[in-house]
View 1 (cartoon, rainbow, N blue to C red):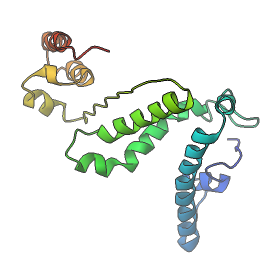
View 2 (cartoon, rainbow, N blue to C red):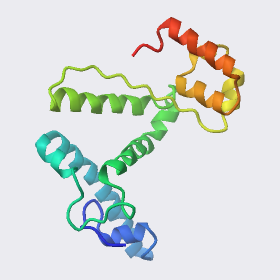
View 3 (cartoon, one colour):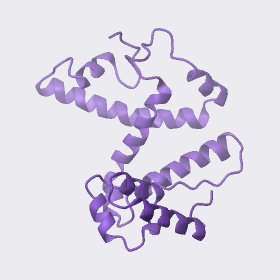
View 4 (cartoon, rainbow, N blue to C red):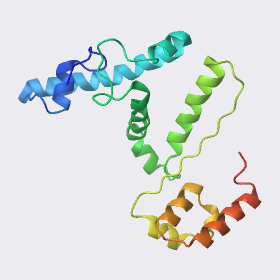
Length: 189
């Protein structure tokens, strides 16, 4: 695989993470410490770039990979790789998510709302209010969700769909819950 220029990680750090290069003892501990520091500081740099770098330059940066950067299938395009930021965002706050007593996904939804409002209101000059709902139904808990729910209309559409697809509720129960949600105005966009 062709190497790309150093960015968040050096080529040696990438090789270590992918298991292509091995270190031991103090050298390995130093490598891990440097990777952690780069990860943290890179998030701060991304924040700086989003908030201060001209929007047209951000657009240009993502139009196509820089010269010499391996493209798909060796490397995903940067815009495809951005979904990993949501994974990272969830992982960073997973303890808060699970220990808060609130519905899992609340912190991710709040951060997505804040990010979208920053992009729309502050950077693009659009007057917008953003509402994001994140519904997380952990696999293996669908059966409990189906058994413990008194009114399927109280569930999110994603949860209803997961229950229907996995045959925990009948299509008629799904349809009834959908109609109830529609009558209550839960489906208004």
